[in-house]
Image (cartoon, rainbow, N blue to C red; front, side):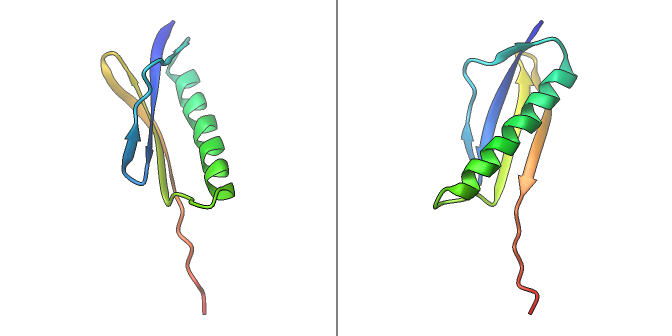
Length: 78
């Protein structure tokens, strides 16, 4: 098992993950990052202050391995 850290970046502000999670492989880490990002985005839109850009950056002790990103843009069509 490998320890993966999931740093959350919201509109440029970084909240580093100090604990991490032990997961069997990178695919499990990618899945966890995607699920976490979905929950973060949902919570953001339900709050009074929502973020335009959100990223979950995944790293191990050796460095970055992947990331899941969300960018919201709302444009008037008229």
